[in-house]
Length: 315
Image (cartoon, rainbow, N blue to C red):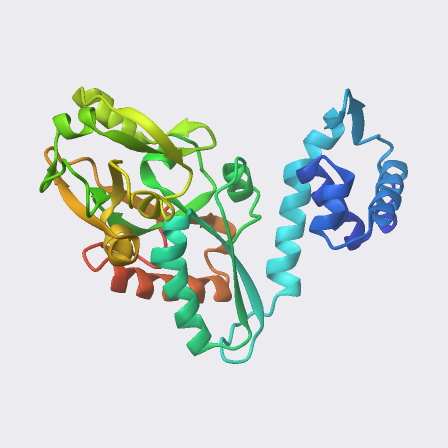
């Protein structure tokens, strides 16, 4: 193989194929036609002397050679993007740039929404692409595929993110929430109320939240009558029911009137909800990313004034 046989466009397609393991999805992610992506794959196979993707049952799998290329290809593209393609400085009043932010619906309401409002008043050429936390968010961070991911500290601390920096942006506490006409609820959520009322549980991708593990440890039994994969929808599921839910306080207070709910103190305080913004360390000195983190820090200070943070990030 000669270096002249590999152009930047082929590397971009290769990166997408390695990420998606699917020609159609890779084409969609690059806004290419499926035949164009297939043609690029054929060229890559000739140039690299390897099939790269092979059929295994109904799906395509990476060959060992393809697996070995995942990190090198991503490193090369990231270096080109940040040192050659991207301007050395950043002017938010003149430059155009898209920032991808991954987070839950709770993060979208309490942090991304005010961030978008702030950026829309500061810079016309900037765009925030908000996306939910998917099943491969750790891979996306490690591969430097997203600008920022806002994630619960307790979840991330149990996983390895050695190549990422972080900045605390959220601290919140959990409160009980019921319909304003709930027949049994008074001012507090105790073990008796949870045991005697139908319970609305927060479940994401089939996994129970850490809050449920804490309640189990306390010996507080629940009779799950419904589940929701989004904090934002949960308050609006309570009206006209006997359901009890546990919600982050800032979100609950923001929607309490519209959702016709009232908030209750917990008899036993649960661990606070702490979330941080994570990004690949390659972006630590990227002028545009530094500016984005500064804006995120300002918004976080306004929304969560009791949280200490460093916009530069910590490893």
